[in-house]
Image 1 (tube, protein in one colour):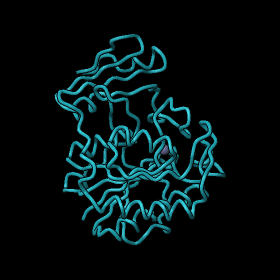
Image 2 (image 1 turned 90 degrees about the vertical axis):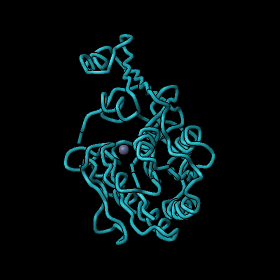
Image 3 (image 1 turned 120 degrees about the vertical axis):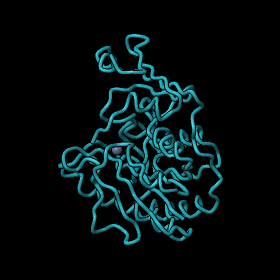
Length: 272
Ligand SMILES: [Zn+2]
């Protein structure tokens, strides 16, 4: 069984503020360890479910040389390999080669979620809302669509209660979710200690992989329309002139394609 793990840092137990996930900040080093150990827990769970090849993709933009490069190599479980510093949402090698499932660890809710700890939709953008056809999505939806384009289902999402709820609404109740904290505001949470979070993530990964067909691959209907509401007019103008993309209102951009991948490629580049 081949398993892809896509990981982010904001949804890890113990993390509630930007300083903890920003490369170079004194708080960052401790949180890299918390992050790496939640990944290890997921790897252990996948192994016990029978995974024979496990690849982890670090999807957290910590800035500078830490961009998509926050995992601590010497702490990583020996039975995974990991992808560091690859452009966001662009690692498809594992998916192209035939992959049984994707597990999402440490995720956060989409922009505008009141109880979403550090909620946002791609930290380098100024997107307020993102829609794939009629589905309002955040980063879980984007990652699920990347996997869905190759027929691969997302079977597990971990993070705060908000992202677990958002993910079940999008992907269905067959999805296994593990909430390691409950957001009280954008930058505060009631949390469980990391040691407990890791035990639940390990168990959740094992349970999720016990039934590979419990969630259908997420494939937005074709042709696909991607709609982005941005914060200000200049953010919309940055899309001007792109093929297949239209600024339909001062702060609304629409990309239309024969399928999701085509529409996505029109608005999202290869950013490291
Ligand atoms: Zn992140």
